View (cartoon, rainbow, N blue to C red):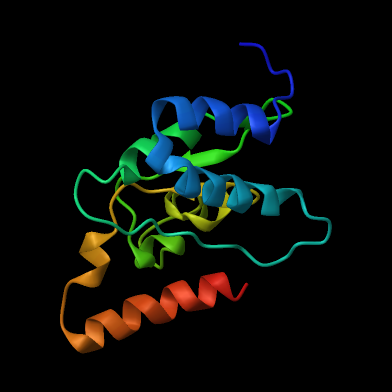
Amino acid sequence: MNQSAVSVDTVRGVISGYFPHLWPAVEAGLSTCATLLLADNVNPVALIYVGAPSAGKTTVANMFEGTTLNGAELVYRSDKFTPASFVTHSAKATEVQLAKADLLPKIRFKILLTPELSTIFRGKPDELAERFSVITRVLDG
């Protein structure tokens, strides 16, 4: 695959030609990816696409899957994302098993792509508060 640079104007033209209503979401996604290029950036950036079913959220997210930067994968896809998956605490697991299970090392300097977040928005108020406190701690660095 040719890895030559493409301008944002070129991308905008292609997206606008095929999916004109999706350009704002694609532009937001590109901006989120660009934060990985900032010098001395230590805090992660979150972008959540919200919209009605069939509004194009998954189409936009899929545009970023498989993206590389200088040969390294830029996007890590997780279909089973939960706030608890950021760091696993299991007394029975070895350090190697924990490293394989923990999400944080897998997404370091990458974009986490998860197609569905509705499961984290369901539950009792105390469960929701716990889930969002984990996400907040991760986003705070």
